[in-house]
Image 1 (cartoon, one colour):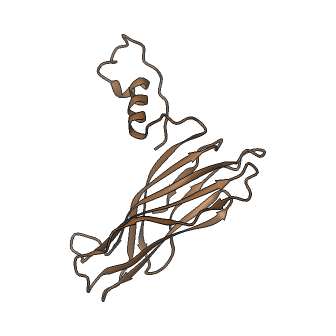
Image 2: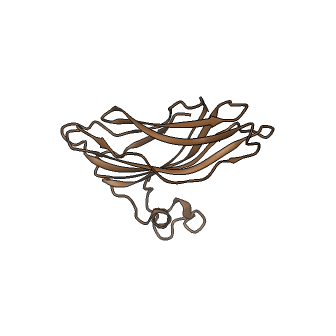
Image 3: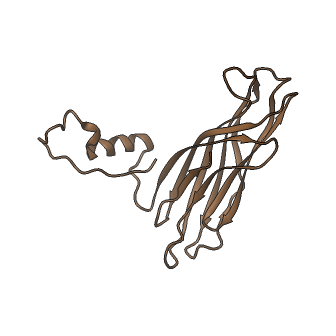
Length: 195
């Protein structure tokens, strides 16, 4: 969720009482209530829905990317924490057997002013459900694993591997929310869903 300041209303403006959603005062209040602070230009939080369908069994598949800007000079530095929450499914639809696992996965990245070297922490599992399967013999999920591949100092490819099982293995999906807490960057990072 990007934060965009709107123009300030003056007391007595027509529509002030009717259209409070356009008031910068109201927007700041609501945003602060949602995340605790109104982000400054050097830090904040981004929330992005991500999804990927047709994930092959046991194949690391890109779900989203995180991109930071290669700024002019040595102004590339910053850090972020990426929190991934959502669910993996195996076969999904109103007439299909299905299985699912939900979870939370986290990793961090630190990048210095010159842009190199940037480093990532390992991806850790915050929490994960057991599998829930409508017909476990037909479709189930054994494990869900996230990995991060540094395609450049500025682009991280976040990938999921879903180990599908059962007598009718098809493809998997992942969908959920990414919350990216960041500090220090001149330009905020960008989270881009692949699916």
